[in-house]
Amino acid sequence: MSVVELMEKRRSVRNYTGEPLSKEHTDAITNHISGLKSQFGAEVRIEFIHTKTDNGPIQLGTYGFIKGASDFLTLSYKDSSLAEESAAYLFEQVILFCTGLGLGTCWLGGSFSRKAFKGQLSLEPEERLRIVSPVGYPSDKRHLIEKLMGAEKNHKSRKPFGAFFFNTNFSTPLTEEAAGIYKTPLEMVRIAPSANNSQPWRILFDDNAIHFYHYPPAIGGFSATDIGIALCHFEQSCIELGIIGQFRVLDTPVDSAVPKNYLYTISWLSTPLL
Image (cartoon, rainbow, N blue to C red):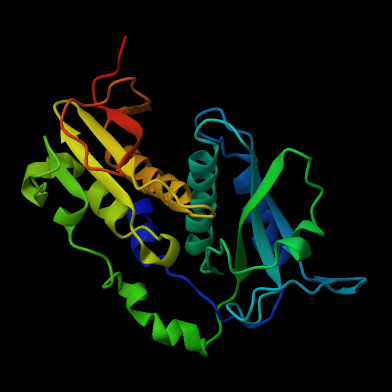
């Protein structure tokens, strides 16, 4: 299954069978994680927590958002420039890999007990636990929350293409036709998961550069995480489609007037800087 197909297939699963992951699946995910490289020089760590052990069950709170999960993936990192974005990029790569294995996952940012999860990790003093996700076998029965949020499965709740992407200035929506070879990578950004489906990314086409912006996060906000997921969807789609480019933080990304509360993150350069 292609990366684009995995992005289209992925959905949040909140109800699980309770069956622990098989050794085959655990080993496959562990090996995949070990082969990934974090972006932008950030120090990122992804670990497993198994709730069913030889010493008895481990109680991990998710405040009723998750049912029947026996295994979790945790995401922690050390603070640095673009660390949260890099961590989210890496975690989404793992989420997509799990999707390819037929496993369910669900990004959790605020709806879990940090104290309980931290108790199962050996975090260094400067490390920050940011995200957890159950990973396991989806139940045939749907969680009540899944029923209430069922539109997410088919990405029907996402805003239209022109609401996020702009051509030359933030007053001119980018059309799918004008996006050219970037139509699919941008569509993968459009359907990417985000906290409370907030979709905070705003992207500006400007000559040979594509500039990524988002709303500044409030205290405890997750828009930096969301933009990291979007960067993953964009770049991994480009790689699969053979579109050449690279991410680079620019001192002066664009001269066009930027709307209030838009925060510049990074740019994609189709012509690398020397």
